[in-house]
Image 1 (cartoon, one colour):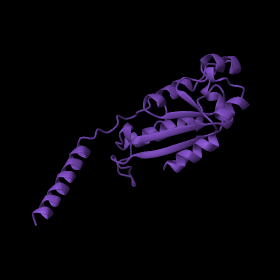
Image 2: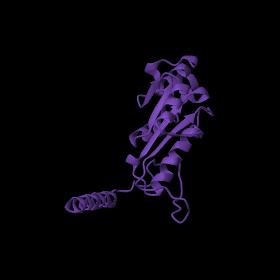
Image 3: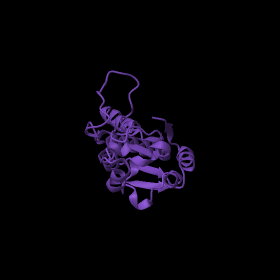
Image 4: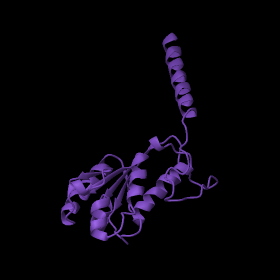
Length: 182
């Protein structure tokens, strides 16, 4: 009988610890990404993200656009970050990965290379840096870099090179990440 009581006490202690851990979790400040991906908090809507769940999302970003404007897919990533933050999800619970390839590849260029190719400052640099600062991992397809004749040294230091978009997207989905196509 004392063994059952000990087990019950252990279970209750574990639940009490979990409850205090959840109670002490700090929601993310809103918006996490200032100046991009603006959302309006809508706390009365349903369903709402859980403040305690870890959200794993891999964004497949392959569309280009006007070289003088922020890439719309990158803006969508910022909006997703801000939407979760508006619901009180802490940034440590957002495991977001952006895989950049195709026509979107040039957005990863550092200032010098971007300016040389497009004759404007890279409008994506600030957003890439802000996404990286809140923990969003930005990856670029190495095959796409070759196709676009972009050298590794020309890539923004907050973006990592991968083997390919196809392999990276498959690997992250195998690890439980949800695919999002902005």
